[in-house]
Length: 141
Image 1 (cartoon, rainbow, N blue to C red):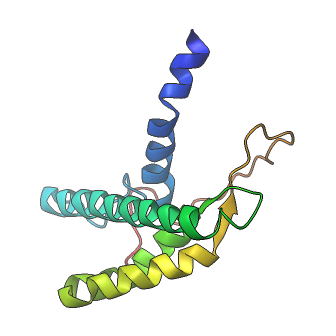
Image 2 (image 1 turned 90 degrees about the horizontal axis):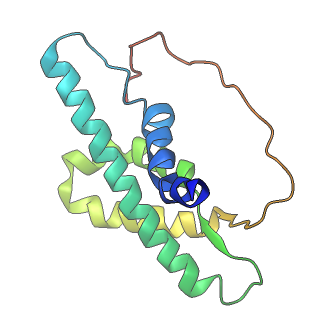
């Protein structure tokens, strides 16, 4: 029963790991409450935007790529996150370009994809990346 319960919370654990390590939700660019709130809401906005783009990319990959190969593929979340970080300012300033930018990211994510590997036989190597920034200081976009 514990194994079934753990599999049900796996998606939440992966999302929390993404928020904590990739988006750095616990690191803030200032010490005032308004700055912390702004950083928190921007981090949640970025996370939701990446999730929407990934789901759209997965749908495109499923429809166009998976039918022609024997493997199952999914969009690379880190690639999408990187593209959203690079285009975030442009998306916020030029709101008419958002659809064009998102479609561009989806088309690129269709090419940069990763295998879905059920029943993996080899364990992943445990990597310990060093922290890029000082504790509680967030990098600028």
